[in-house]
Amino acid sequence: MSPDALILSAGTVQAVPFLDRLAPARAAGFAGVSMFAADMETLAGQGVDAAEVRMRVADAGLFIHEVEIVGNWLPGTPTKPNPGWLEALLQRTTAAHVIAIAGAVGARGITVAELRGVACPPDEAAQAFAALCDRAADVGLHVALEFVPTGRIPDLATAWPIVEAAGRANGGLLVDSWHMFRGTPDLGLLASLPAWAIKSIQICDAPAEPEADLDHAMVHDRLLPGEGALDLAGFIVALRETGTSAPLGVEIFSDALAALPMAEIAARCAAAARRMIGETIDG
Image 1 (cartoon, rainbow, N blue to C red):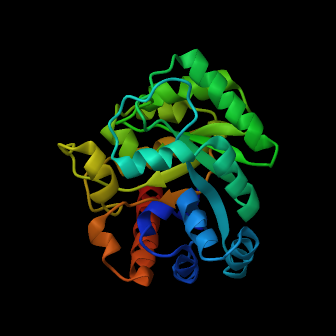
Image 2: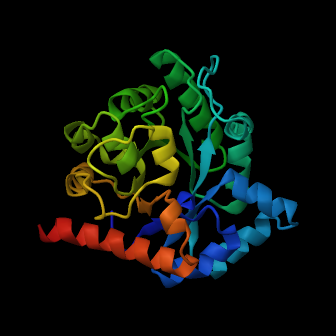
Image 3: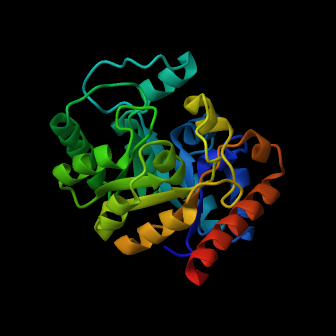
């Protein structure tokens, strides 16, 4: 984990057209970006194919770390009453769909989460995750399982046994600071993980007290690192204990931040992440 290997996550700049994110991200010092599957769908509708996306990203001096997010992968019946647009998105973001996009644009991996309220026994979830990893491995991709406190894989203690039981070299975790501290935080468990277990990291901040509506706050009200009260220093120290080499993504779903010019968003995110990393080293 290094301040020189920062990723500008798609959620931070989701209102900005994908290709318009590239130059400002590079100028701010980001090494890579992530992409939503919907970003590629939009580009394809505009006549931009994956080969051009791949070329434009490389020309900008960046790489695509991951394509987000497989939302339809567990066996079982969804029970969460998501908004219609979100449920439609999650239904179509199957493993096949997201892996095809990631392979075509030259991404390094994909992410997966449970966002539909599917109750699945741990052994079946591990089998489903292993199958997803095998499919992704065919095109050289890693798979990062993201635990989300409003879903049925809500915390690290639930997600890690799934990844461990799946036993796939290209399978691991996406550890997001907002999800960590809005769920059941366990920095001791995080620090105990082997380096290979963490494929991706995302960081942001939030107030000390959980919001009344976590689903809303998760995609509207996150803060820049250092602007809230989460134990981000402890989070980074625990990650260092694992020995992970995963890059650090800055993911800040924030209506206030999104109102700023793209270049300012990128610069603020990079500066806040570097400052937080530097403070933990100095401390």
